[in-house]
Amino acid sequence: MNGLPAGPVPAHFLREDGRRSATETERRILSLLRDEGPLSRSDLARRSDLSAQSLMRIADALLSRQLICEGKPVSSGPGKPATPLSIVAGAAFGIGFSVMTDTLSLAVLDLAGKIRFTGSAPLEDKAIQPAVLQMRAMMHSALAQTGISADRIVGAGVGVTGYFIDATARVNPPSLLEPWALIPLDTILSDGLGMPVRVDNDGNVAAIGEAMLGAGREAGRFAYLYFSAGFGGGVILDGRHYRGRFGNAGEFASLIPPGWPQPNLERLRLAVNAAGGMFPDLHSLLADFDPSLPGVEGWIEEIAPSLDLVISGISGILDPDAIIFGGRVPRKLAERIIPRLSFFNEPRRGKPRPAPLLSISRVEHDAAALGAASMPLRAAFFEEE
Image 1 (spheres, one colour):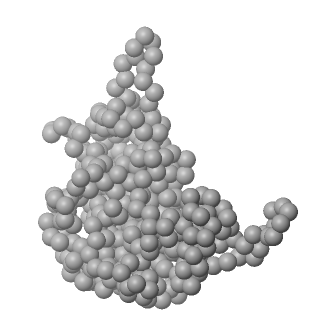
Image 2 (cartoon, helix red, strand yellow; image 1 turned 180 degrees about the vertical axis):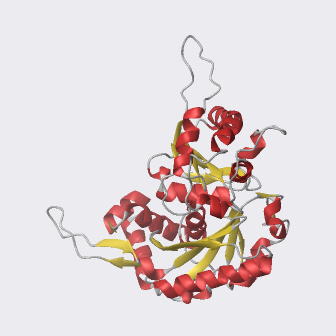
């Protein structure tokens, strides 16, 4: 499931039957074209296990809806040149928001998965209605700057810091985001933004963003550590996002016993300020982060045992290819943290268990906003992941 939804797909994105935006086989074809680029009809039929006749019918339907287009014929040997099919990138767009305790980030993705816009701004008011108005203003500004028509937006995804309390879109965020706690965010945000909205937590959507644009290109199984005002993450297994029963898979903070220091960046801000810093919020601390600031070394020393416990638990339970350090953690800070960590891994017969690689996110923009932007597109047109 791609987040928790509110609101139907806009009618002009639906098929002729008016009931759905894509069939299962259409989703399979669109997913292949998104992931692999232009492919001929024969290649698509072979890779999708469809007959040539079925593929022809599906391709014609997608062509008529202008979701895919034909390219120039390409000759690859004897016989008639093959005509490649590709996704029409501008056929639909997804909006993504990441809502943090002090910052709003926004991203726009097109149907082909390309980034069309990214931006962020300090969260002006944490009360839900003013915040939604700010989100709406940011969205309209992004559309104006990119020239994207509002009727091409299939929906929005929103990543919110906190964990789900049940199978609805009610999130339990840190105290710094109190007005967002335990309310039906999906319907509130859908009404405020004027479009379908899918809600997930920030660690989940950041892991999705990393899977699309970062570590996922090489690692099919990884755990994503999301550092922000809180600490959490997400899980990618065999290339697919794993949410768990309530959407809380990847709540790695729960591995840390009560009384142990949580490895979050708000704790870092307080440590730096206690050592003489004057940073009123995370946005100001992270804007041009200096890893040599007084208080940073003490914070690393304090939280390293907690992270040792987290990475050891992840390694023993999931056995992933990698553990990615991401979220809002500055690269220079992550480079100082990782060498200080170690797995609980007693050798047997001189042989320790293989451990996952510890690495830093390679997504240049806000992975959470990008992952959130992909949710409405995946829900409408692609295979569920």
